[in-house]
Structure formats: C-alpha cells, structure tokens
Amino acid sequence: MSWEAVIGLEVHVQLKTAEKLFCPDSTVFGADPNSNVCPVCLGLPGALPVLNQQAVELAVRTALALECRVHRTSVFARKNYFYPDLPKGYQISQFERPLATGGLFSAPHPEGGRVEVRIRRIHMEEDAGKSVHDRLPHATAVDLNRTGTPLVEIVTEPDLRSPEGARAFLQGLKHHLEYLEVSDCNMEEGSLRVDANVSLRRSGTEALGTKTELKNLNTFSGVEKALVLEIERQRAELDDGRAVEHQTLLWDGARGEIRPMRTKEESHDYRYFPDPDLPPLIVEESEVEAIRGQLPEFPQARRLRFQEEFGLPEYDAGVLTATRGLADYFERAAAAVGDGKLASNWVMGPVLQELNQRGLDPKEFPLDPVVLAELVELVQSEVISHRVGRKVLVSVLETGKSPAAIVEEEGLAQVKDEDALEEWVSQVLDSHPDEVQRLQEGEDRLLGFFVGQVMRVSEGKADPKEVSRRLRDAVS
Ligand code: ADP
Ligand code: MG
Image (cartoon, rainbow, N blue to C red; front, side):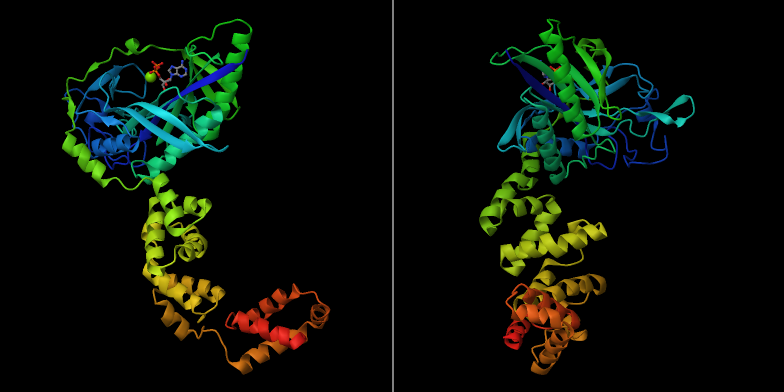
C-alpha cells in the first residue's frame, strides 16, 4: 500500500514597518550589532510596550489578502522560554485569540493547475534576537537588533501533498505579499521564514499521522529538498513497522541533510498567558473595511485582466504583474500608447532592460509613460527606426529632454533622401561582392544581412523598408 504525504506550513513574515512592534527602535537590516535596542525590547524592568498601529494595519492587510476573517478582539500573550537571544524570557505573540482565522490562498503549480491551501490562522508576534556563531572565536555573540521586530505568522491547514506543491505555494505567497507591499519577503535577510510540518498516511485514508517539524529552511529549494528527505525517512520507518516520533528536525543546507534537533515541545510547555502589559487588541469592523478598501487589485486577477483587456499572452501578463510598480507603469503606458500589445513590447523590452541595468524600481523610473508613448509614436510613424528608438530612450533617460527634441538635435530622423540611400546601398554592395553573387544566385536570407549592413553604415538612419526595396532592385 502506498503512502500519502501531508504537509502544513508555518510562515513568518516580517511586516514592512520602520519601527518595532512595541517600541520605536528602527527595524533597518544590517545596523551595527545591538545598536537598535531600548529598555522595552531588552525587557528591562518597568519598561512598557506600546503597540505599533502601522504593524496592525499591515497585519490586517495580510489577513485580508489571504481571505481571512479578522477578529474584532485578539489578545497578546506571553510565550515563555529561555534562550540567549530572548532577554525578556518570553516572546509576545498571540495564542488563543489570534488576529485572523479561516483564509484561503492558491498559487500556480509548475505542473499545471493550482495548489489551494486553507489558512488556519494569522497572528501577530515579535521576533527574537539573533545568536551569531561566526563573529567571535570560540564564542557565540548575541545581536538583539531584531528583538521586537513585527511579524505575522501564517499557519496553513495541512492541505499540501507534495514538496513541489509546498514550494509552489511559498513562491506564490511571497509574490502576493511583496505585491501587496506588506513585506519585503527577503529570505536572506530573514524577513520570510518557513517551518514545514509533515506526516504520512495510507493513501485513501483520512486520519493524520504523527508529524515532524522541519526548521532552518532558509531557501525555497531547501524547503523542497528537506521535505523530500523527511518523507523518505518517515516512509522507511513506517515500512519497517516503526512509529514516527513527534520531533523537530533541522535542515542543514550546506550538507543537504536533516538532523534531529529535539523532541517536540507541546504548547502547554510554554505556559502561555495573556500579557498583563497589553490590553486586548481591538480592530473595529470599520477599520477593517477601510483597509479592505485600500487593497489593490490582486496580482492574479490583474494578470488575467491584462490577458483579456490588452490581448496579452499569459507569459507577458505574468512578467508585467511581477511587481505592482511595473504593472502600474505598464498600465499607464498602455493608456498613453493606446495599444496594449505595443506598449507591452516596449515595457518588457527596452524599459525593463533599463530598469534592471539601473537597478531601479518602476515607481522611480524617470521615463514618464506619456513620454514613452511619444517615443513609440515616432517609431510607429517611421520618423525613426526601432533601433534608433532604443537609443533615443536611453538619451531621454540621461538628458531628460523630449524624444522629439533629441531626434531633432542629433539629426536621427530616418533618411528617405534618395541620394543618401543610394550612396549607402552601393557602398555596402561594393564591399561584399561574394555575398552579392550568392544573393543573385537565390540565397535570399542574405537580404537581411545587407539591410543590417546598410543600417550600420547609416548609423540607423536609413529607412529599412526603403533599403530592402533598393537592394532587391540592385541585385535583380
Ligand atoms: P503544533 O502544535 O505542533 O505547532 P499545530 O496543530 O499548531 O501543531 O500545527 C502546526 C502546523 O502543522 C500547521 O500548519 C498544520 O497544518 C500542520 N499540521 C498539523 N498536524 C499535521 C500532520 N499530522 N501532518 C502534517 N502537518 C500537520
Ligand atoms: Mg504551532
């Protein structure tokens, strides 16, 4: 009989706030160790937490983006444990009464279709500090800058059935949350972290088997590989008639292996209790509705709309909705150009290339879509060639001048002047006698080569259609 894998994920996402969850220290990444700390996040006696409202807003936004129900009342609790990176001796989290429950999220599966996963709960909590093992010889250092950083924990139902599905879900989730601007979801900087729970059961049965929890999964491929190994391990145990032990395992990405860390603690081990320093968090329905009202169109819906409204292929629509900034830019360009497919060619080609080269966000791209449309018009009406158009785009970015002014000043307009064209064509034909002969003998594809040569000697100013006509005449 075969086994079926059952997987549920716990995803920690750092909310994009400038300040910590209960104090105004900066959340900036990479600051000097222990430079962004204060009595509140250090847990000094008498210091009192004050909840960051921006974090609440982003958490609600996350919950709504995952179709959860946001509860009017949620409660911050203390999760008590000892660890060197936790000076307070407890983490403030939500336990019995989380911010939101009962959501749903789906992501495209690489093999087609979608993986659909129910969201069990989303709660707010603060991050702990960091133990640093590679800074001091023979010692572990502690950096408390992360302490108190606002997180949401997104807990799924055990709805995933394969390591690839888990990875696809995470990729989709990351894209969704980045797009909604609730988090940077940067795994290297720790702003997105995943624990994976997995168990096996006999195919066709319902009851869940004993699960193990995988931690330290610092890349999506790590999640997938660790799950593959752990499923194999559990299968071997069960096939040999042994039971799977309820435990936590660590993924070692460098060695590509998993190691047992500890037998799993139970939630009662943490002695959760409501934090006496924090009142219950009340989020009124009107506030939830206000935040819902500000949600952008979700990327998945926008992608489908781009396909329908502008007649774009699925691939193009996917590229253009990769970030909200790019999708906004494209949409303004499409309106200005008046042709979605044409606008998409320019945005996916030259614009994206310049954005990447300059490491710019589309929001700060200095080429206004209206100016892009002016440039596209110059190319469409054959005042300049496509190739010159790309050059003009770069000049516009560098000088801030209008495309028409650049074409004028640099004399870039296509030359239709008979004499000049004649001169270029004969110059090229004269310098390639062998190719001319082959063309005359019927090797038609050489025409493209000749057009290219003429464009080169004319520095892109010749009108390629006219050049092509003249070349044909000349060799026939
Ligand atoms: P714990 O108390 O160990 O943290 P929870 O019930 O809170 O366990 O669930 C944590 C995560 O583990 C959730 O994402 C849930 O979907 C998943 N999960 C729970 N039971 C199983 C199981 N038997 N197999 C796989 N995943 C599971
Ligand atoms: Mg749990």
